[in-house]
Image 1 (cartoon, rainbow, N blue to C red):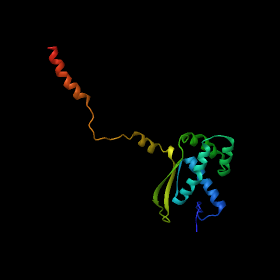
Image 2: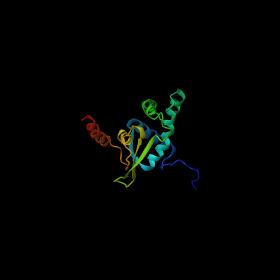
Image 3: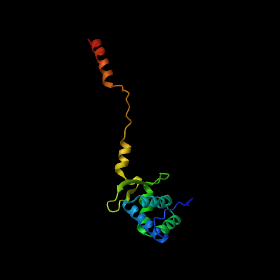
Image 4: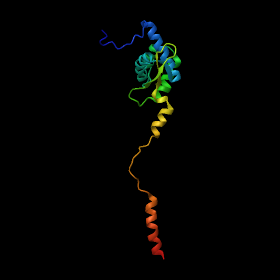
Length: 156
């Protein structure tokens, strides 16, 4: 039984799984979105979210903790500079998984995992959305048209 077992082993041994997730995290930090299978995307989401939370406070201890998971110095630097700056006010949920369909070769479920704050197209559409109401608004042109004939009568 799998009671209380949160880690998806992905049919790999521990060393292979840790290095694969570290490499996928480096690619995600570098490119801001990657395409992978749904199972790997979910495992990567659990792997990278605590690292982004640690990157929000930039001190030596947190850099060393993140570097123990991700072995690439450039990726750690970019995580602490660019990514942490964009997600500084967000309390969590730094990544989004979008399912893409099935892969042609082996029919595996594919997904795209991306950082939420780095998708400018999706975020701009959310900000520009207006609230549509069915109520009629007061029109300034009707009020002006009503006042104009009365003023014309008094001037004559």
